[in-house]
Length: 259
Image 1: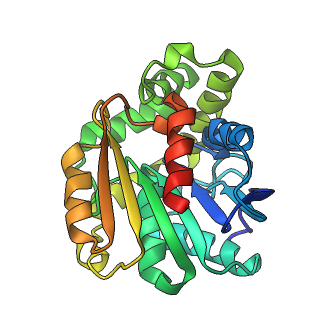
Image 2 (image 1 turned 60 degrees about the horizontal axis):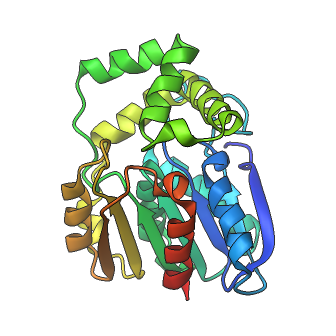
């Protein structure tokens, strides 16, 4: 049993309660540009936006390396949050591995969700890994500077980010890689939700940047072909992190989809 996830709740902004799930080695900070833009462009209703950190990430307690977990465990953490907050008919937004967690949630509790947006999601068949990736994570866990370089390399035009914001993203990544890193690699290597994805009926918008250097476009194409109610949109100017690279464009598309 884990402690309840840290979450931020921002009321009176959406038509439906909307839960945002960040990606690997990240935190709720990655959604801050979206929140700022959402507020700037106006409320859609009286419900809330909810940003929650994975176990071992962000403002949650550090996670011991020798305590492994699964994709089902991560999904259960968020489903417990939904239950604790008495939420129904929830919208989901997941980025990268957070997109796969959102998919697992829709598989486990299909009646809970109204619509979903998956931004550059990890493919339903996981990721092929070799020993070099494990070694890279070990090196990152030993070097704050290396972790900073790796996490910011996932953002197109990262050099334009505010320095304080970049530092926060890097520090959150360094905390995460030292704790949850090994478990995440095992999830990426072993997960396979392809068959289960064919049963998900939640209307789902899959967004994938054509300049994404992390997740291949073919993974999102496969996922869209598996999910009966999915729509894939390819983003010609985006990398792996449209939510940070162009918060205005990302937020506008979110609001359109959820309207």
